[in-house]
Every structure is written in structure tokens, then in C-alpha cells.
Length: 192
Image (cartoon, rainbow, N blue to C red):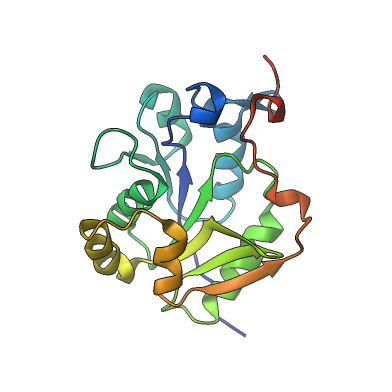
């Protein structure tokens, strides 16, 4: 039996919400509350420290996390910047990453991802649903920070390309797994 990982958790909430008219996606309503509050409680069940990557509304996010991290560069450079900030702040062997636009992810999925990652703890692990990659739902060993820093300096901005270049393992799920629903449009969220 593989050793279970107790990761640092990173909730990615640092985007500019361009598909939501600039609204902060982490503060969109889900089940009567900001989605970040819902997902923070989920991630806390993994047992490690909870980080939230955010570039605005820090006063709202701060009570939900142990620590906040922000992109090192201005202008919303993308999710890989949030992951880089999370790896810098990570005090455990692994960082589990969850984007704030996947409100239906559950504990069983996160545990399955961590179990898959524990099979080869030196490699990152990400989710694939059918033929569609979900690179922002992943587990990354903290020791890969230098590789990510180097790739960032060389202009890499794609989480998928970087994870594949590191030999990422895959947790395969069905193409229609409802837990992977992305909330990218206003219709995906409560209107109030």
C-alpha cells in the first residue's frame, strides 16, 4: 500500500474573470456562498495547509486560507503564475491544485488524485477526462520548483505543456464526469 500524501492545498482564484465580465470567479455564488468558501472547506479535509492564490479581494479571501499568495508579475499572467507562487509557499512535499471554477469536485476525486500521485511521488499528476486534459486539477512535487522557475523564465505559460514536459502521470476519468464541470459563464453560477 502506498504512503498517503498530506499535501499543501492551493485554490487558484487569481484570474481576471474575463469570461465573467471581469468578476472575481472565486467569489461567484455556489450553493448559497462564494465558491471559494465551499472549495476551501473541501481542501481542508486533506489535512494540510491551505493556500489561496488571489490577485484582488485579499480581505475576503484571507479568512478562508492559512496564507494567501499572489502572482509575482502584474497583469494576470495566467494560472501557471499562481501555481509558481503556490510552490514557492509550499511547506510540504506536494502541492495539490484546484481551480475555483470547478465547484463540483469532491473529496473522493481529490483522494483518487493523491493516491495516483503517491504511486510515483517524484512526478506530477493531473486529471484527464476522456480526451480532455484538466491540468489545473493536479498534484505537483515541491522539488519541481526549480524546473518551474526555469520554464517560467524561458516564457512557458501553459500548465499543460509544463506538466507534460515533467512526465506527469494521469488520473483518467470519464469524459462526462459531472465533477469536472467548469463554471466559466454567468449561467453556470447563481445570479445573485
